[in-house]
Length: 251
Image (tube, helix red, strand yellow):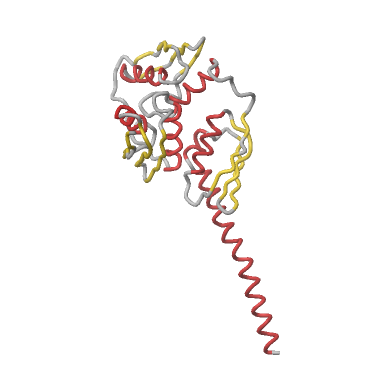
């Protein structure tokens, strides 16, 4: 009887262990899913998109519909930068048909995307129109320096032939807003990666990005000192970035 009781207790213990293991894994996956939803990117830029998030043993599957290719890339890069995420299965679909490369619609999306993440321009409120490769910018600029910088950023988009900046400058110039926003590291990493990709001057640079407490570290290769310096400047102007350590090497 004692032997049978021992066997029963052992079997019960093993059953509890087998139940407990997947529960533990499930808890970790639940935390990952919760972390994704709490990121700045998902709460601000992707809040109107229909995105379903499912983590299984650290591999996150994204399904649903997003507004454009930028949002699809943002979702992937943000999730990939979160702790304990082992991989991203990005199955998000884009609404409608994607614009033809280098078309006016394509350039419009690229210019808006390029301006979106920068702290020193009003990317969210700047109107962008494109006709035959010529970009027209409208809206309000806090000062002349901001207006000029918006022009430079738009010109640096591959395919843009010219930029007509019709933005209105505030008659009472004020100090440019350079406040460092409190944004999570995964969202900062995603913004920096796409910023460097969308700027013509840095799109071909082989770069990896790591962020810790708002401090961005860049790794990779640059062709010359000018490219290396520009990568630092562009990364430093991304929302949420507190400092940039550029460890890239010149080929």
